[in-house]
Image 1 (cartoon, rainbow, N blue to C red):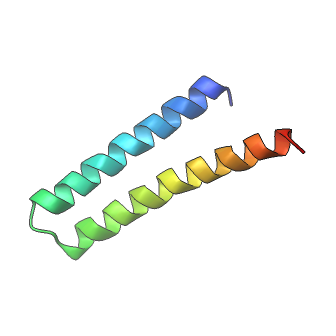
Image 2: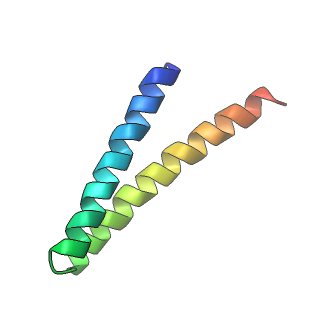
Image 3: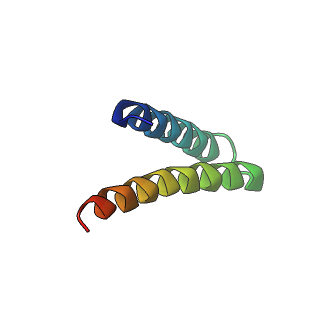
Length: 60
């Protein structure tokens, strides 16, 4: 996967995470919305973590 593809994937994941967080905070704060928001946040964290691991492997 190219850097641009990774960037666009992360950008889309962040957009989805922000939408889920906004829905949680503006639409009654249900447990289902909280779970969805946390799942989207975990996806973003995973993508960032994976990229960080890839970058660090270049320095070894």
